[in-house]
Image (cartoon, rainbow, N blue to C red; front, side, top):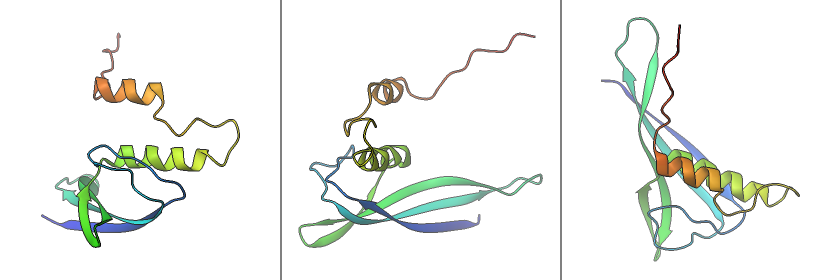
Length: 112
Protein backbone atom coordinates (compact mmCIF):
# COMPACT_ATOMS: atom_id res chain seq x y z
CA UNK A 1 0.00 0.00 0.00
CA UNK A 2 1.34 3.42 -0.97
CA UNK A 3 1.61 6.07 1.73
CA UNK A 4 2.35 9.79 1.55
CA UNK A 5 3.04 12.41 4.19
CA UNK A 6 2.42 16.13 3.79
CA UNK A 7 3.79 18.77 6.12
CA UNK A 8 2.52 22.29 6.76
CA UNK A 9 3.09 24.95 9.38
CA UNK A 10 0.15 26.40 11.30
CA UNK A 11 0.69 29.78 12.92
CA UNK A 12 -1.31 30.80 16.00
CA UNK A 13 -1.19 34.44 17.07
CA UNK A 14 -2.86 33.82 20.45
CA UNK A 15 -2.89 31.02 23.05
CA UNK A 16 -5.27 28.21 22.08
CA UNK A 17 -6.79 24.97 23.37
CA UNK A 18 -7.29 21.62 21.66
CA UNK A 19 -9.09 18.60 23.04
CA UNK A 20 -6.75 16.03 24.54
CA UNK A 21 -4.19 18.63 25.66
CA UNK A 22 -3.91 19.20 29.39
CA UNK A 23 -2.93 22.85 29.10
CA UNK A 24 -3.29 25.95 26.95
CA UNK A 25 -0.78 26.00 24.09
CA UNK A 26 1.22 29.19 23.53
CA UNK A 27 1.09 31.20 20.31
CA UNK A 28 3.63 30.32 17.66
CA UNK A 29 4.34 28.11 14.67
CA UNK A 30 3.39 24.43 14.84
CA UNK A 31 4.39 21.75 12.33
CA UNK A 32 1.47 19.55 11.22
CA UNK A 33 2.14 16.19 9.51
CA UNK A 34 -0.70 14.44 7.71
CA UNK A 35 -0.27 10.83 6.63
CA UNK A 36 -2.48 9.38 3.91
CA UNK A 37 -2.77 6.01 2.22
CA UNK A 38 -3.67 5.42 -1.40
CA UNK A 39 -6.98 3.68 -1.95
CA UNK A 40 -6.99 0.79 -4.39
CA UNK A 41 -9.50 1.89 -6.97
CA UNK A 42 -9.32 1.44 -10.71
CA UNK A 43 -11.51 4.43 -11.55
CA UNK A 44 -9.76 7.35 -9.87
CA UNK A 45 -6.73 8.19 -7.78
CA UNK A 46 -7.90 8.60 -4.18
CA UNK A 47 -6.24 9.08 -0.80
CA UNK A 48 -7.57 8.50 2.71
CA UNK A 49 -6.22 10.37 5.74
CA UNK A 50 -4.72 7.97 8.26
CA UNK A 51 -3.39 10.40 10.87
CA UNK A 52 -2.74 14.05 11.64
CA UNK A 53 0.05 14.82 14.08
CA UNK A 54 1.12 18.16 15.57
CA UNK A 55 4.58 18.79 17.00
CA UNK A 56 4.35 20.42 20.43
CA UNK A 57 7.16 21.59 22.72
CA UNK A 58 6.64 20.27 26.26
CA UNK A 59 9.18 20.82 29.05
CA UNK A 60 11.98 21.49 26.55
CA UNK A 61 11.28 18.41 24.42
CA UNK A 62 9.27 18.11 21.20
CA UNK A 63 6.38 15.66 21.28
CA UNK A 64 4.28 14.48 18.33
CA UNK A 65 0.63 14.42 19.34
CA UNK A 66 -2.34 13.22 17.37
CA UNK A 67 -4.94 15.92 16.65
CA UNK A 68 -8.36 16.04 15.03
CA UNK A 69 -7.89 17.98 11.76
CA UNK A 70 -11.39 19.50 11.98
CA UNK A 71 -10.74 20.75 15.51
CA UNK A 72 -7.38 22.17 14.41
CA UNK A 73 -9.08 24.05 11.56
CA UNK A 74 -11.70 25.42 13.96
CA UNK A 75 -8.96 26.61 16.34
CA UNK A 76 -7.17 28.38 13.47
CA UNK A 77 -10.44 30.04 12.43
CA UNK A 78 -11.06 31.24 16.00
CA UNK A 79 -7.51 32.58 16.17
CA UNK A 80 -7.91 34.56 12.93
CA UNK A 81 -11.41 35.78 13.83
CA UNK A 82 -9.98 37.93 16.62
CA UNK A 83 -8.58 40.36 14.05
CA UNK A 84 -11.90 40.83 12.23
CA UNK A 85 -14.59 42.89 13.99
CA UNK A 86 -17.97 41.22 14.02
CA UNK A 87 -16.47 37.73 13.69
CA UNK A 88 -17.25 34.88 16.09
CA UNK A 89 -15.60 34.88 19.50
CA UNK A 90 -12.59 32.72 20.30
CA UNK A 91 -14.70 30.19 22.20
CA UNK A 92 -16.14 27.15 20.44
CA UNK A 93 -19.41 28.07 18.79
CA UNK A 94 -22.61 26.46 20.06
CA UNK A 95 -23.20 24.96 16.61
CA UNK A 96 -19.71 23.42 16.55
CA UNK A 97 -20.18 21.89 20.04
CA UNK A 98 -23.61 20.53 19.09
CA UNK A 99 -22.37 19.01 15.84
CA UNK A 100 -19.38 17.37 17.55
CA UNK A 101 -21.68 15.84 20.19
CA UNK A 102 -23.93 14.38 17.50
CA UNK A 103 -21.13 12.74 15.58
CA UNK A 104 -21.26 12.19 11.81
CA UNK A 105 -24.16 13.79 10.02
CA UNK A 106 -27.02 11.53 9.06
CA UNK A 107 -29.02 12.60 6.05
CA UNK A 108 -32.58 11.37 5.49
CA UNK A 109 -33.22 9.09 2.53
CA UNK A 110 -34.34 10.81 -0.65
CA UNK A 111 -37.83 10.22 -1.87
CA UNK A 112 -38.29 9.43 -5.53
